[in-house]
Length: 136
Image 1 (cartoon, one colour):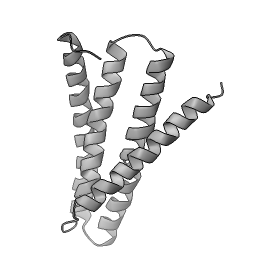
Image 2 (cartoon, rainbow, N blue to C red):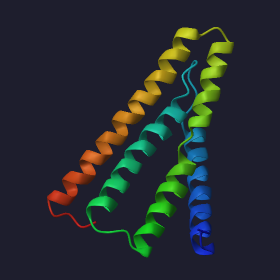
Image 3 (cartoon, rainbow, N blue to C red):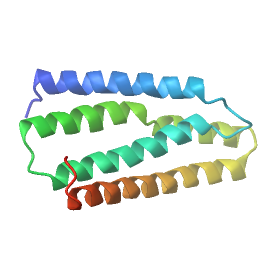
């Protein structure tokens, strides 16, 4: 199955906007000591928003062309470009390389675990909003 040019364009545009948003966060959040706070912030907020988005879409109706466009444009594109687990891997590598093994392990494992919790919180909030009658 070949993706339509519209879907490719929406994912590409979303990815570009997500990447620019991540860059803005990295410029706004100063690096302190060895902890890369900007990467942690974008990954946790992105995981939360992805959980929220996908849960809302799943609970508010069947997949339609418009909902697929929203899911791919916002989820795969925008939030996929916003989050950066490749930067997390590089930062863990750099921490190990500079002799901060404990910090590297804590940051790497903590980031992934906190990302799972953030995503789960988004799912819970997305489900709660639907049950309370909130608009999708």
